[in-house]
Length: 256
Image 1 (cartoon, rainbow, N blue to C red):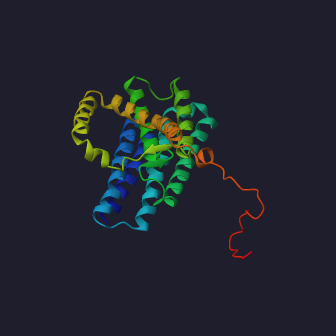
Image 2: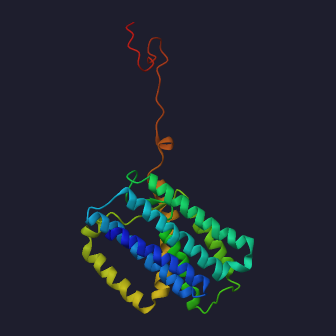
Image 3: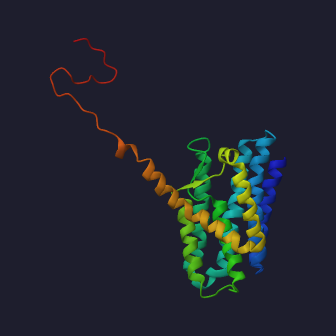
């Protein structure tokens, strides 16, 4: 019950964000999406700690994520900045939802496979919080909804949509071995980050999310250079053309 209740709380925050966006309360909507991300990070950990993981919980979590991190941020972005662009604006909002659903479906079928240290494609919660952080950051600068900067929000929605369904690698932060090895250094860094967050929380959140979104392409390029594909790095086999030295087909055990 406990993990599913936390998932329900995440979905409630997403629904509250949609209602707040419709009512023009964009700050409340952005904050609600961020709270939904916190709840989304807790439900899975609670399920593992209480040994109550189940297939039902996985599917329920995905449905809640689509509402909280797919529909809610797309409605927020559309009503806040994309309405003046008409069809191009609501198509961008729909593309965000569709790519988010595809991202969740691909994640569900890839559970238990691949490297757990990385996500394939931008996680949908990160894309949603990037939208919310951008709204709060623009309000900090004094930009109101429907301003001339809407083209940048429109481009960002398209970019985030394609990043979610891309094959780029993003750190999942599930590997805690680095934290165990360098706990003191990370503790000092965490204290400094908390100080920066206390000084300018909106700016800090926007910069952190922007860095996370951008690090995916950079990380993928670095990994490709360090680990070339087998096709590029493999050495073709050398066959002996002399008589009687050709390999037999598989399954054959003929004595010559």
